Length: 398
Image 1 (tube, rainbow, N blue to C red):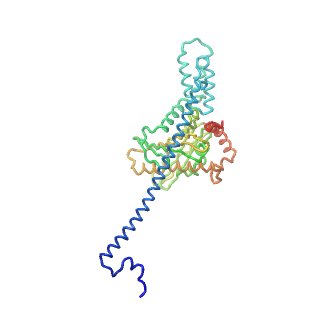
Image 2: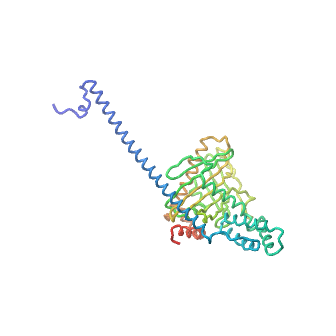
């Protein structure tokens, strides 16, 4: 007789029943141990990744803290302190105000305007003179259509946006993964979502360029099927129109987005708000809603968007983005979760991908191709002239 088959040496059909049962139990325990070891290895790897992400985020946060401390030290230098402002110097202050507006420094302009208004109030009843002419000029500049008419409102919006994007107060954490936090805030009439992340492998100017190039939104912004710039008011001010035509709904948005140079405090800000025909300059037409029928009623979405870019180095930024959309209190929880998990998170991921493509000069990027045009080069040059010197100073290259 030849040797028994291998299988019969493990569980021999002729062996006693108790022996067969014991061997079968041993085989099952062995298989279970293999599965447990595999799961344990996966768990250990997951813990290691999470620990690495935590250490990386803590290191980045320490770097952010160091950068902010450096900026505070610079602001405390004697040559950076505010100069005294009097009635006689009001004319020069108005010139400075108009220069700040041209540089899109809305918060600094608002602060100086508040001081100018205080001076005018304090000087009421003083003898007529050069200061009185300057006070009349200030009133004319603040009138509708004047060179400073936007300063009070834009300064207030920028202050509120910076406070909201830099604070966790009033926000509820939805998720935190791979260094990216998603938070939300729900009121009776609206849902607000905020994404905050540290992003490597991107140039600070490119991160802003992705948002500023409104004509390319349909190439990267989730659910956007068409986009157009209706009017470029300036390099930092644009009126845009986008359409979101999906099988279940057709929506559009008419918006005006403008930038604020807050680099004195280390930030760059974009504020985007809905507009109507009455809000846009003469000669600009806001398209009417198209009569398109889908499963859900079509509507114009009145969203408010705030975007913050905090340069940390030549290849890294802190990025924060908030989106507020009208949402009825009766809206189902699944809709809220869809907006939280799919909508805003996908917007951020797509923006990060586009910014990294720009940094790598990837020819598949619509933004890289746009930067080869005359308009694209002009816009990129305008952004770089304001951001690159600040980044160089951060890295000690200035």
